[in-house]
Image 1: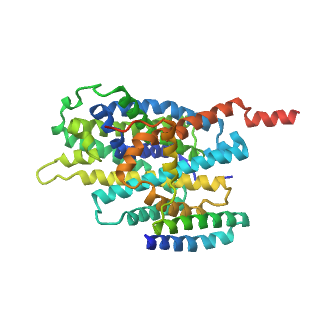
Image 2 (image 1 turned 90 degrees about the vertical axis):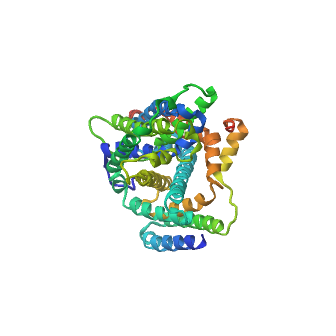
Image 3 (image 1 turned 45 degrees about the horizontal axis):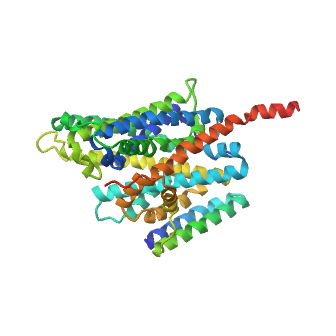
Length: 371
Length: 73
């Protein structure tokens, strides 16, 4: 059943993935206190470890062209078990949606609108997102190219503006942390920004595929996004050094130091604006995939029926998901990465193995006809 | 918070009403059930009732299994 009739181009798909990952530059505070000046290694390892994950997702897309994650679950596991697995995925998507909604609200509250209640900020964000989701995937993906390029531009310019503060000795000493911290940091860097790309399995059927296939575009998005996050972490380490781990948003502190000319400073606002735009885009994608997943699971006629319900539920959920920002960071460091690994690696891999073990649907029907 | 949820409920109600009129009966029942569930969650949250947090429960399970990372010193 298709409730969405719009299509996006492969390039738009690539820039959607890039934007989705770029927005996670905010989350560097999850792993930076673990590996400090070596955090750039965790991001690099995250990009490398995300490649096999992406290959699993691409394998599923290839085996089930034109099917979303929810439809794949039903095709592979059957109606009952498929329903249960899909329900778990919906919970995962909605939790991600809520956490990112909370992130954008807290970022705006902390940096720009200090006195505005959080609930008002996230409600307004949801209303704008709902409008875009209502109009479908084409509207959601339309500005991904502009957002991704803007993010790259801001990172490059801010790097140039802070060149005076770069100290290469800030990267030293290398390999000074415990092995466990490197493992934890790499795990966090892989699951929290990069592995979340699994939600793009919900969008893949709506991509107009050209002869080159989708793989190069998916990897292109991963590379653009990953390199941007890597650039941000390298720049922050070069400028802030070991004190990097003391800040909740290290890029914000780095940008504060940037001075273009006398009287032309406080450039952090540029970074915050682009980060809000990117986070808004991530929330939008997560909102869209959550709505589509619920629509397809319950086989509803239109995804528009679910938009206000999913939005209201996530606003309510955001108010009690974590009692404070510190609790969020502690949980992310402790347990969230393991939990997300189930949805990003274990379940997709299991689905791929089961689907490979079973006969492909076309062959099954042919054999049935022959019988 | 109560006012925010009241606004949401009103928007959702008046937005859904015309859409549901055109939808089949099965869709109406499912959407109505989800609507009641969401409304109940929103109302309880607005009243300050502490609802069970599924993410926290899942994290507790991970912790109980012994898979969680040790806290940072």
